[in-house]
Length: 383
Image 1 (cartoon, helix red, strand yellow):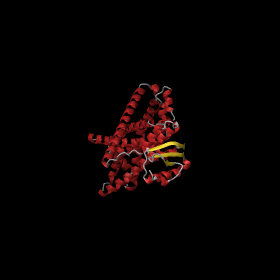
Image 2: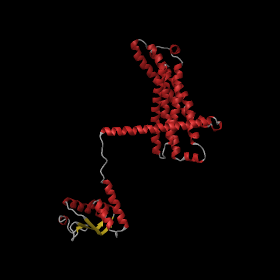
Image 3: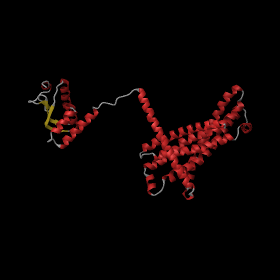
Image 4: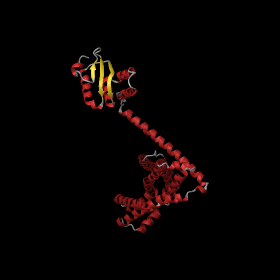
């Protein structure tokens, strides 16, 4: 401990005990105003490699958080706690401050979690993703069950039908969406006609462009594009509306009035979606074939009359029914996911945005997945 004396003799903060060279006498004001000087003295003391096993805090005057942190750094976690326990006469506030600083220093000094290999982390993330998917699936199935139960109860109780809410939702979902659905499918119909004409012209079979347009829109593109648009437009709107009500505690107010939020918020939206999506799907089919017919008339010299004649001869009405049959299924799933994510909102605007994004992603994923499964079913059935 003799190396301490030449390092900082006669300083007002740290000195060795004259009776025990392994004991430090802590004195003076250990406050923020002396932080720089204290930091310098502690650095010199550590650089000399001096060792000590005891410290005397009886001469310590003022102490704040900055000084306490430096004291904990100088003495260490274990020694500081031992000194605090022995100095019973020390003020309670000072004992509490030093104890908390020592404990925080111990927490920071704990070894970090051991990192595993890349394979372990991959398996860990895969397991977490599987658990998340399972939770989403069980929540979705549970909410579907609640909604179907509510629909069954309301079907036998006409007094509970909320016609006004359903009509308002149909206006927002269907009527306001007709322009965007018609424009989008019209342009995609034109693009498919261009691609079909380009490929089939090499085989001298441009006349079959009509069949390509009809099959693609009647069976797949009409309902699929409409469902994806509704997933992005309507499912997000459902989540934002219900989520905002959840954040503003309006849903709790509905429950306090003795009403069921499922009957007021979910069922009218589901019924409106079940009505709106098939109508929009029909608009999409007609608009897509109109775009294809326009390209056929301008590029392939297939007149509208010939287009309709080929359509009538080569395309069976069954394809129209198969495409329209998927619309209610997509509508139900989109409405359910949008409403379910709205009820998951925790109460903040950040949560509303997060669950709105989640509802769009889930709706689009579920629509494409179910469409693929239905296409496989149709193929197995020979339809």
